[in-house]
Image: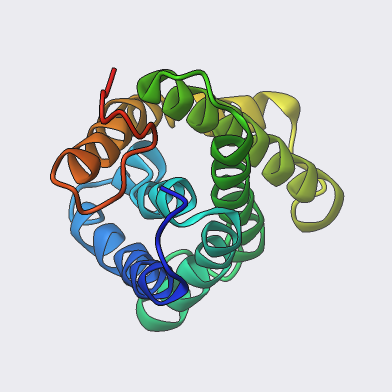
Length: 183
């Protein structure tokens, strides 16, 4: 995954930013789908995994901002904390995948995703509590970040590793482990 050239990474990064606008539009036709299925998180997490932490970080900042400007989603009230959360997702997935090498692609992906999902929710919660929504309670944060979002979290944990594995299997992305054995 680290053998892509900067132009390839930039083009993919731009695609993932565009998906941050398009996916929420499709999902928001379902009531409350944005807060339940978390469609904007998917391209940010995938970007961090396959393009690396700087691209994931930038995608996490630009995706929500561009979506807000073009579609009004997320709203301006939610945007700053969401940018912090998504930027954390993109950066952490890329960093973890860069430094963790278990010789098992699936395990590497799950470790990166789970750590990033927890870190993103924590940074968003801290930002909300200290800056953007000082009255937020721990119960409200846990409910929004983990209970309401559980279907989206499960969707990400099922879908994202399969997407990355498929891209490697089709040789669109270089194999993480040169032997070409995907576990």
